[in-house]
Image 1 (cartoon, rainbow, N blue to C red):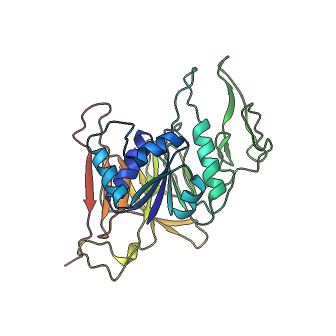
Image 2: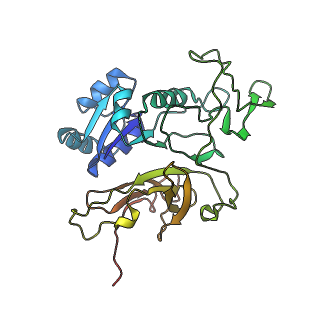
Image 3: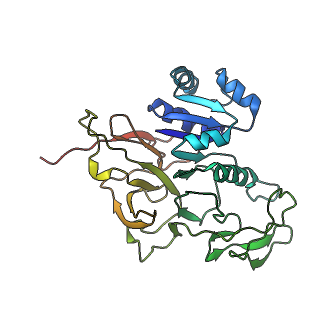
Length: 308
């Protein structure tokens, strides 16, 4: 499997290095040419114990590489992680310009089926899961879905305006260098908020922190006592960071969700997962603490144990 990680800050660099350590081929992308060149030389811009060793080891093994070429990285990848910064603006709102530009660049490079994972910090209440097969308008920052528009907000006056038109969105930004009249917002395969959904009770209710996980690639030739069985082959895993859920999605040929299969284990705030070369699932659990030493944080391996 090959993944692309867009952004080489704390989240992106650590994510890419850890996936490479699991044996996955990873390309990390950044727009800063000097930063990319330094990473190629082993100069790590952040401090994380052991990260320099992991990066050096996996660069030498040709599992981890760095580039400014987002188009090539996306075309090669099966899974694309968006891990660009969303720093606060002077009014306290998140600056989504880097995120929007990265999403636009990814959409323009898509040439087939991709799983897109948002690792950037984005506003709450907009959880959705979608299959991206071609460029399109997936809503942000005007609509969560075609039926759920955001409203125009004046941060200077604190006054909310009218809802945006999801069928005919218009980009009036002075920073816009592309289309002003945008195509209609596309419907995601799944959209949800804090309450439970009658059609999908498996999701439950609670916070909103959608995470798009891997799809299992089964191999009968793989000699492993812990590999997952063929019944999970091709099923994308969805996990909810705020609800401790892991669910396998059964999809139609067109990518629509036909059923949800909750998996028989619980993870504590899962934030990353990938199948290893042994066919077991490896997951990073964030745990319940914030901005402190977190005893709940751990790397977990989920093995398949057959019935006697």
